[in-house]
Length: 167
Ligand SMILES: [Fe+2]
Ligand SMILES: [Fe+2]
Image (cartoon, rainbow, N blue to C red; front, side, top):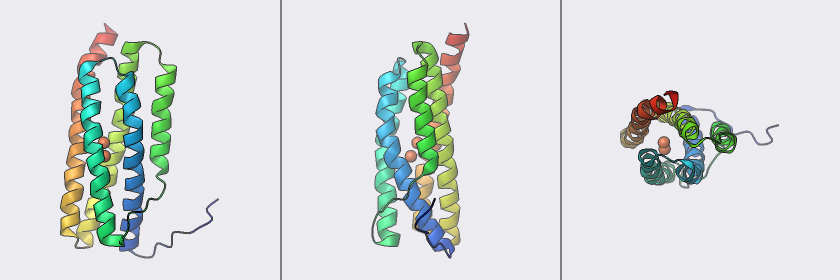
């Protein structure tokens, strides 16, 4: 049951509400990625996760700056999607005992997160454009590109790792 209504009446309020959810999402990803690094047994994969953890810390800072600029503070709203996706990832770590299969599973879990982030930033960027927030749109595009590159790298790694487990 929702006790407090967010009172969204215009595109600007919708934009700020979704920036708050993006901040919650990124903060939760910075907490989830160390587990993925620790549980990966493929060095290329753990390096990819480590690199993206540093990028994700940058995403937190960028979204905080956008919120400061547009809302005077950097509050969060709960992103329920990331709660589900990170729960799936930690279940995977618990349930998949074979290290090679676990690498494959970790890639799958991580790509679900990246795809969600790409959707989030694509939407926010288009709303920023509609609101005439050109600088915001530029920042959001820079984040979206890092998410897309992380996703592409995971696809490349999965092509090698998947073949190894299928053999
Ligand atoms: Fe991110
Ligand atoms: Fe990401």
